[in-house]
Length: 157
Image 1 (spheres, rainbow, N blue to C red):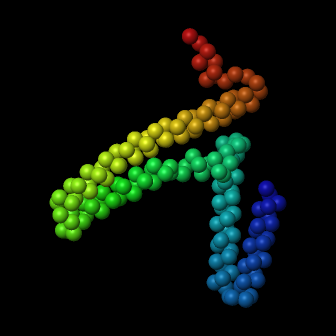
Image 2: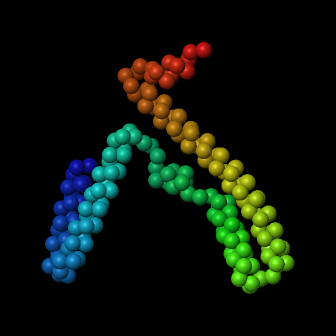
Image 3: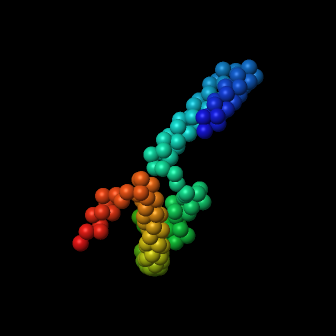
Protein backbone atom coordinates (compact mmCIF):
# COMPACT_ATOMS: atom_id res chain seq x y z
CA UNK A 1 0.00 0.00 0.00
CA UNK A 2 2.80 2.40 0.88
CA UNK A 3 4.60 1.56 -2.35
CA UNK A 4 1.50 2.35 -4.40
CA UNK A 5 0.99 5.64 -2.53
CA UNK A 6 4.60 6.61 -3.15
CA UNK A 7 4.32 5.73 -6.83
CA UNK A 8 1.16 7.81 -7.19
CA UNK A 9 2.76 10.77 -5.42
CA UNK A 10 5.89 10.61 -7.60
CA UNK A 11 3.80 10.15 -10.74
CA UNK A 12 1.70 13.19 -9.82
CA UNK A 13 4.81 15.29 -9.26
CA UNK A 14 6.34 14.17 -12.56
CA UNK A 15 3.11 14.87 -14.43
CA UNK A 16 2.81 18.29 -12.75
CA UNK A 17 6.37 19.19 -13.73
CA UNK A 18 5.84 18.02 -17.30
CA UNK A 19 2.56 19.86 -17.75
CA UNK A 20 3.94 22.87 -15.91
CA UNK A 21 6.72 23.27 -18.45
CA UNK A 22 4.41 22.67 -21.41
CA UNK A 23 1.21 24.45 -20.37
CA UNK A 24 2.21 26.66 -17.47
CA UNK A 25 1.62 26.99 -13.76
CA UNK A 26 -2.21 26.65 -13.74
CA UNK A 27 -2.05 23.19 -15.35
CA UNK A 28 0.63 22.08 -12.90
CA UNK A 29 -1.41 23.30 -9.93
CA UNK A 30 -4.48 21.51 -11.24
CA UNK A 31 -2.56 18.24 -11.51
CA UNK A 32 -1.15 18.70 -7.99
CA UNK A 33 -4.64 19.40 -6.62
CA UNK A 34 -5.97 16.26 -8.31
CA UNK A 35 -3.11 14.21 -6.88
CA UNK A 36 -3.77 15.62 -3.41
CA UNK A 37 -7.45 14.76 -3.73
CA UNK A 38 -6.59 11.19 -4.75
CA UNK A 39 -4.25 10.95 -1.77
CA UNK A 40 -6.90 12.15 0.67
CA UNK A 41 -9.46 9.72 -0.75
CA UNK A 42 -7.04 6.81 -0.48
CA UNK A 43 -6.17 7.73 3.12
CA UNK A 44 -9.85 7.90 4.07
CA UNK A 45 -10.51 4.59 2.34
CA UNK A 46 -7.58 2.92 4.10
CA UNK A 47 -8.70 4.21 7.49
CA UNK A 48 -12.25 2.97 6.90
CA UNK A 49 -10.93 -0.46 5.95
CA UNK A 50 -8.78 -0.49 9.07
CA UNK A 51 -11.69 0.45 11.32
CA UNK A 52 -14.14 -2.03 9.85
CA UNK A 53 -11.75 -4.92 9.37
CA UNK A 54 -11.41 -6.84 6.19
CA UNK A 55 -14.50 -7.10 4.06
CA UNK A 56 -15.36 -9.59 1.37
CA UNK A 57 -17.87 -7.22 -0.22
CA UNK A 58 -16.98 -6.73 -3.88
CA UNK A 59 -17.76 -3.64 -5.91
CA UNK A 60 -20.55 -5.43 -7.77
CA UNK A 61 -22.16 -6.52 -4.49
CA UNK A 62 -21.94 -3.01 -3.06
CA UNK A 63 -23.50 -1.51 -6.17
CA UNK A 64 -26.24 -4.13 -6.18
CA UNK A 65 -27.10 -3.38 -2.55
CA UNK A 66 -27.17 0.37 -3.10
CA UNK A 67 -28.62 0.60 -6.59
CA UNK A 68 -32.33 1.30 -6.94
CA UNK A 69 -34.41 -1.49 -8.40
CA UNK A 70 -36.38 -1.16 -11.62
CA UNK A 71 -39.56 -0.80 -9.58
CA UNK A 72 -38.04 2.09 -7.60
CA UNK A 73 -36.97 3.84 -10.80
CA UNK A 74 -40.43 3.37 -12.31
CA UNK A 75 -42.02 4.61 -9.08
CA UNK A 76 -39.95 7.80 -9.23
CA UNK A 77 -40.93 8.35 -12.85
CA UNK A 78 -44.64 7.87 -12.11
CA UNK A 79 -44.52 10.19 -9.10
CA UNK A 80 -42.74 12.78 -11.21
CA UNK A 81 -45.45 12.42 -13.86
CA UNK A 82 -48.11 13.05 -11.21
CA UNK A 83 -46.33 16.24 -10.17
CA UNK A 84 -46.11 17.31 -13.80
CA UNK A 85 -49.84 16.68 -14.23
CA UNK A 86 -50.61 18.84 -11.20
CA UNK A 87 -48.45 21.60 -12.61
CA UNK A 88 -50.11 21.39 -16.03
CA UNK A 89 -53.52 21.62 -14.36
CA UNK A 90 -52.46 24.64 -12.32
CA UNK A 91 -51.26 26.54 -15.40
CA UNK A 92 -54.30 25.54 -17.45
CA UNK A 93 -52.61 23.25 -19.99
CA UNK A 94 -55.06 20.40 -19.33
CA UNK A 95 -58.69 20.29 -18.27
CA UNK A 96 -59.89 19.07 -14.90
CA UNK A 97 -61.49 15.98 -16.54
CA UNK A 98 -58.27 15.00 -18.29
CA UNK A 99 -56.34 15.57 -15.07
CA UNK A 100 -58.70 13.37 -13.06
CA UNK A 101 -58.52 10.56 -15.62
CA UNK A 102 -54.71 10.64 -15.99
CA UNK A 103 -54.20 11.15 -12.27
CA UNK A 104 -56.33 8.11 -11.38
CA UNK A 105 -54.34 5.95 -13.80
CA UNK A 106 -50.93 7.12 -12.55
CA UNK A 107 -51.95 6.92 -8.88
CA UNK A 108 -52.98 3.28 -9.32
CA UNK A 109 -49.68 2.58 -11.07
CA UNK A 110 -47.78 4.37 -8.28
CA UNK A 111 -49.52 2.26 -5.61
CA UNK A 112 -48.58 -0.93 -7.45
CA UNK A 113 -44.96 0.16 -7.86
CA UNK A 114 -44.66 1.28 -4.23
CA UNK A 115 -45.86 -2.13 -3.06
CA UNK A 116 -43.38 -3.83 -5.42
CA UNK A 117 -40.50 -1.59 -4.27
CA UNK A 118 -41.35 -2.27 -0.62
CA UNK A 119 -41.26 -6.02 -1.26
CA UNK A 120 -37.84 -5.82 -2.90
CA UNK A 121 -36.61 -3.58 -0.08
CA UNK A 122 -37.48 -6.29 2.41
CA UNK A 123 -35.38 -8.79 0.46
CA UNK A 124 -32.45 -6.39 0.32
CA UNK A 125 -32.74 -5.69 4.06
CA UNK A 126 -32.63 -9.43 4.72
CA UNK A 127 -29.46 -9.70 2.59
CA UNK A 128 -27.84 -6.80 4.45
CA UNK A 129 -28.75 -8.26 7.85
CA UNK A 130 -27.30 -11.64 6.84
CA UNK A 131 -24.03 -9.96 5.83
CA UNK A 132 -23.89 -8.06 9.14
CA UNK A 133 -24.51 -11.24 11.15
CA UNK A 134 -21.81 -13.06 9.19
CA UNK A 135 -19.34 -10.23 9.78
CA UNK A 136 -20.11 -10.03 13.50
CA UNK A 137 -19.68 -13.79 13.80
CA UNK A 138 -16.27 -13.54 12.12
CA UNK A 139 -15.24 -10.65 14.36
CA UNK A 140 -16.34 -12.47 17.50
CA UNK A 141 -14.56 -15.66 16.43
CA UNK A 142 -11.34 -13.70 15.89
CA UNK A 143 -11.14 -12.54 19.51
CA UNK A 144 -8.80 -15.20 20.89
CA UNK A 145 -11.51 -17.81 20.60
CA UNK A 146 -13.22 -16.38 23.70
CA UNK A 147 -16.98 -15.83 23.47
CA UNK A 148 -18.04 -12.23 23.59
CA UNK A 149 -20.26 -10.73 26.27
CA UNK A 150 -23.03 -10.44 23.71
CA UNK A 151 -23.00 -14.19 23.08
CA UNK A 152 -22.77 -14.95 26.78
CA UNK A 153 -25.85 -12.84 27.47
CA UNK A 154 -27.85 -14.41 24.67
CA UNK A 155 -27.22 -17.93 26.07
CA UNK A 156 -28.78 -17.08 29.43
CA UNK A 157 -32.49 -17.87 29.89
